[in-house]
Image (cartoon, rainbow, N blue to C red; front, side):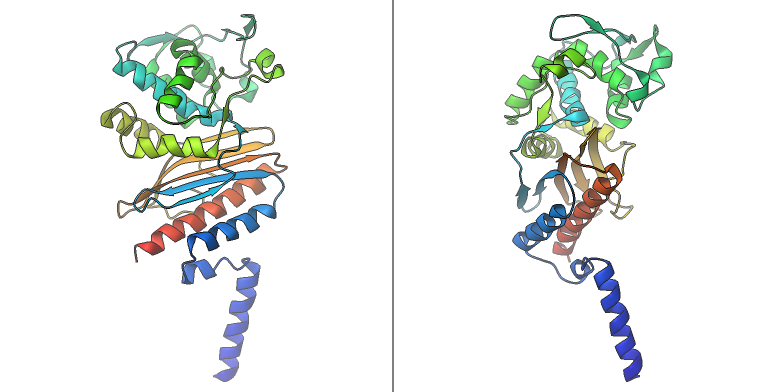
Length: 306
């Protein structure tokens, strides 16, 4: 029996080392400063610059790393655009039932010159087959969020105006998010006129969404419903139990990968998590480290309820 006990301990030690020591978190709950240190050490092992913003909406606890550093927003800016749509509907400036002509010609914010979106760089291919037809604004918003349609995004931004999106972010307390334009405006890109965000600002707007304080409780609930249908789940949700729901929006361009949203535990508790990255070398590696950090934070919250 003693030999078996030693063998068992040896197997456990080998498994612990191979797992990078993460199995300890399943046995004991670290303090938030300890968890922050653990996350920082893990991020330092991977190429790139990372920001993390976490807020437990039950306790108010926050874990913040590079939270005020600016990142190219990529498709995380599509959540602010959706918020602007719901705000303008509440102001009776438009309706989600409005019909929008599907087209693929837009004007650069630099000089008004025309540009179009290449289908090759869009996760959505269906909308391009509908050119010349009409879609409801609601269906375009859904595709903008759930399949990150760039074409739908540009059609919506043309209707609501990017400047209004930025102003609405300021009203919500997101002081650094900047929405200049839609997608693939190469002249604006060349001049550095790019949509930008911080992890902190995304945390602010998801916090208010979770509290029902964006536009109205009904509008907040509707937007969360769309975010819950997100089709790209390789980061924040990837290593979480299936019964945990995540209302979130991802974003990626070359060297950049983000995820941001609200995590709902089965017992009704919830928290906001934003993970941003830039200067990364490997998308799959980055997705995996983001999923690992998400798992650690989930365990931290889940163990508090035991």
